[in-house]
Length: 227
Image (cartoon, rainbow, N blue to C red; front, side, top):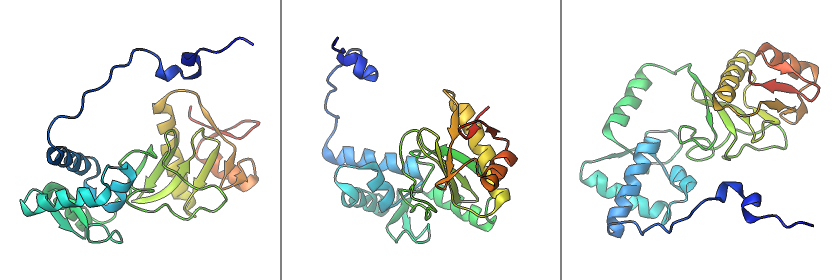
């Protein structure tokens, strides 16, 4: 048999490689930069968000830096998100935005983001909702998560074959599916076909009715998401 070239096996690793130089600055300066990046990325930094990033030194190392930030008046520590413990840190503008949002009531916004996006707190700062079938949501590249009114309501697994739902409100699910379909279109690439929903065939009558209501198109294998 003809042997395969290494770049044929791993096409994304082709090209020229250069050894990067070591990060500049002292270990303290690098730790401060990491803490700044986490604050900018997550808004509210918690133990879960640090663990999800697999930061060298873990939460203990970041905590020491954030504590120093607080003592210097650069950030605030408080109980900003219910259920995530008291070791939460955020910049002043983020705290003000949270207070304004709280006084304005619960947002009805629906958004679909990559599961690994910092905008998705589930599986990192917040636990995933309880799944209905054998499949479990994960923060993997290629997976999508839809959040409605601050709650995780849909999770499309990598490859798009399996969809997980976390709501019994059909109207909410329809809006979430429409948001997810738009996200698939924006990402480009090949269309995805949902074959199972919560471990059940997407072609079962009650499941199919929900997907059709959201504008998904039936195929012999399941429902196509994306236009």
